[in-house]
Image 1 (cartoon, rainbow, N blue to C red):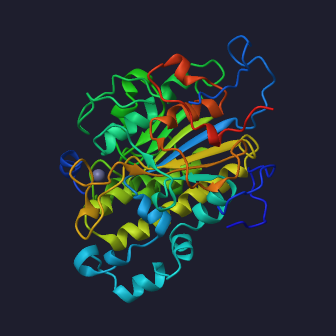
Image 2 (cartoon, helix red, strand yellow):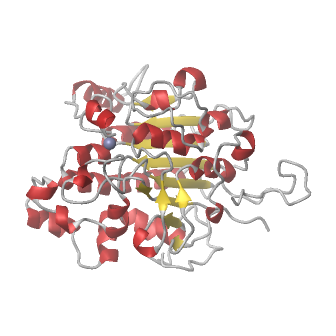
Image 3 (cartoon, rainbow, N blue to C red):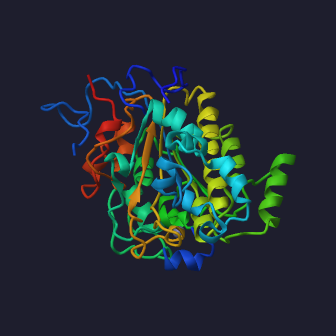
Length: 397
Ligand SMILES: [Zn+2]
């Protein structure tokens, strides 16, 4: 951390003041104010003053069911065993790869991009060992209620199952798509097919690439043919959730054709390997997730429409239990599943690094934060929505 190198896309006018689902669907079913004042008092509604924000694009990225414990403390030593962690790797090999005595070194080993770039040049909430708490407020701590909360800005007690069906609530993505300057510039990539319901695709008509649907259509080149063939022929761990790596290729390719200004990217694997009780694969997948986020950041920074004007919000939909068995599952039965983490990196986010001793922040605040970064007042349109995370938004001068 504290690297002096310039990170493309991150302005340096804020000194770093601080260092820094489901194995089977059934399993998943079972377990699973600071109002941002862009407007000075006395000014008429919607920002008349010159817009000093640099963010023109927002990418919301989620790794499903990835615990705050791994994010902030790296590999859990009690789970690096066959008995608790169900590991097939040799324990010493896994330790060589992911274990270090020093906690900062250990977490950086698992999440190098998150800790050397995001936390150094942006902010990350949720380290409970340092007095920063990030939580879901939906009381259920499994996927659909969580995604609904983060995407609509409020929990909905009706949504109490991943099989709930089409979401009656309008997500901030669907709402942003109704704004004249963003219409047609909002899209969704997610490994989990249930996002068709969560974003209510029949109503929202958001462009979506989810689950095992063939990623390419029309006249295909050899690379695209190959990807489609793998989608058709690969043995599926989960019928509704494609592998993260299979999503990454079409996602990175897509920017040559479409350049959305508001993008959701959902990666599902970390939850699946948790439910499968495979801590070795969870660690490998979490490490690969970090790399995928880095690749996405670097890909976008090479494109003029995104360079220096894109903010990433990176988070999870729920936590998990803790303990030798409890880590595998999440929900009301597994204490602590409500605890999450939220990271933000972009040109309008002061580089406060790893947050400590903060007021509690909530999953519901993510929706308004996505909108506020784009200069939109979502809670004004949806009064039930929580306020944005004020600390990640540059104050207007
Ligand atoms: Zn799950």
